Image (cartoon, rainbow, N blue to C red; front, side, top):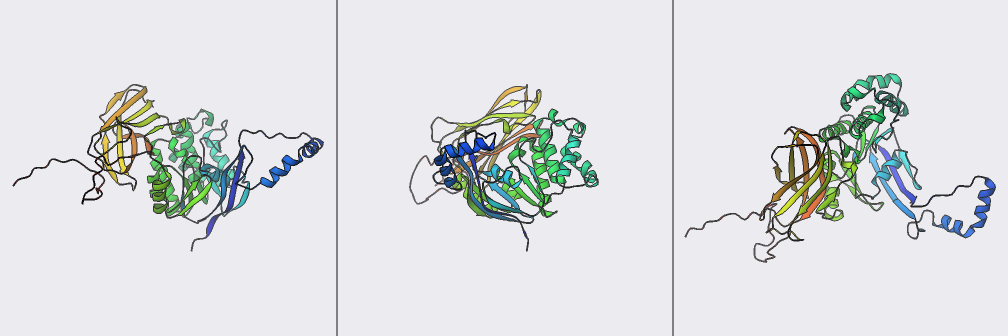
Length: 412
């Protein structure tokens, strides 16, 4: 039976929002301040650790979170933005301290949380590799044996002796993941930062994480909004909601619950810089229809706006519509279009009488020259198709993932 390698007990983290804590310069000044505000200080001490009646400006990012991870497990951590996922990883990685609770970790942790985290901007890529290895407790000889493998996997061999401050965000992610995955930590912690990398490197990273867990028996903690990646990689998952641990279980069961209960439908999303890579900056993805509610009898348009940083390239857009159970309904690919640099817009028209009355998810892939994937966006648009006729008959609910209106002929 596998041993427990991570044990989290009643973990909580509190932040003060919009308040700058005043610090006394001397012991006498602190004593005067304490005597001057006895009631205020008593209230702060009394409320410390409580979640119900906090003073204004206090936010609990995590509240009494408890779970265990076995050796060799791949744990998927899912939840909406602001649920506490990144805070949990920062505490596990010793970047920040918890307000209360306890963590027991057996082994070394290598983490890839934010672009550039753990790198010194003035040092070269090569020097940062040695620095990270030293922090993990490795000797120079041990790092020497891994160096070529790290550089080769990252794909930045031409720039490995260039200071990190001149790297693009994509290059930092490439080197950061390669360092974390190849320096033999017992525990690998990966946040959504992989979304910054290009699609091809994302798939390469997922393959490496799978190998790290299954072949090498190491433990992986993986935060992602990409449910397909979570299902493929993880054998256990948890849901965080408003800082609380709301679900623990097998990946399929937890993901299904998340899709059904925690993720609302949305027909439009505007992207932040965190989704940008060296080739594409997604701007906006949205559904356009004449009516607010799209029914099975309505056609609608899917629009995707982005900044193209690959001028004079042939760009294709691929749209994948799937059910919430990850069953692909169809995949539509645009014509190959030579684009100049700058803003571009693609529109795909989905005909009426094609989709059934259920909730679907939309995936977008941007491809260059029909062979080089540049961007993969999943699980950001979820839309519902309503039953336009609302008829009740002996057929009952229409089954199937599609509901086409086919041509019929009757001979008598």
